[in-house]
Image (cartoon, rainbow, N blue to C red):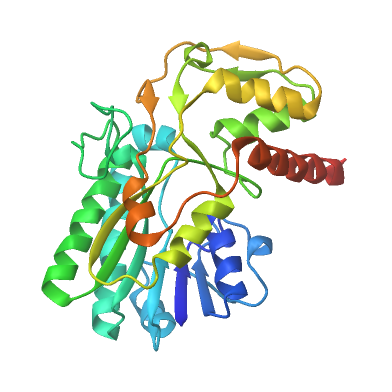
Length: 308
C-alpha cells in the first residue's frame, strides 16, 4: 500500500514508519519537526517537511495514497492547560483539514492516533471503548472531538477510520521536547545520577505499553473497513512507584525522587480493557514490562554515553 504518515518523525510515528517499511509498504512521512527528529525517520521512507494545515502540500503528498496514519498532533498535557486554543486548532481543525484533503484526493482510509485521555477519570476499571467519556483537559477533549469528526466523514463521505486510544506509551526514541513522560525522565535521571520529580507518592496506577507493540497495532488494523475504536494498552495496571523499582533493578542503583504531591488532570487509576482488539483483530502486546523497560534503558544509556 501507499501510506502517508503524518508526524512520522516523532516517537511513535518513527516506529510505525519503520515497521511499515519492513512490511514493504511505500511510505511518505510529513512532519514539521516541531516535536520530531529527521534522524528518526527510516531512510526507506520519503520525507516531506511540512505542516498538515498546508492544503497545497497535502494535495501533493496525498496524491495516489491508499491510506493515512495520522500522528501529527499536540500531545503535551501540561501545555494544553497553558494554551487550550492551540490544542483545538492543531488536533481538531488541522485534523479536519487533513480529512478534507483526503476527501478531495479520494484517500479512503485513516488510522488515527488517539488517547486514553478521552475517558478522563474512568468510572470503572479496566476501561472499555464504549465507557463514559469525560476528558479532564483540552488535550483529551480535542482528541475526542476529532474522533467525532472521523465519524462524520465516515458516514458522509465513506472514509474508513480506526482510532487507537493509547494508554501509557514508552520505549526508545521518546525524546519529547520538553520531557514530561515519566519513564524517559526517570531513566535519564538514574543514568546521570540526578534527582527527579514524581507525583502522588508514586501511587497512581497506569497501563504501560511498549512502542513497538503500539506500532504493530497500526499495521494490524490497516485491513479494516468501517468505523472502529480500540484501546491500545497492556491490559495490566502497575503502580508508578513499582515502575521506579523496576528501573532501579535494571540500572543496578537507586533513583532519588522528589515528590511533588497532586498534579492537576491526573486520574488515580487508568487501565485498558483490550479484549475488543484481541477479539476483532487478534492484536495483543508481545513485550513484557521488564523486557520493554530493559530495551528502553539500553537506548538511553547508549544515547547519553554518546553525548559525553
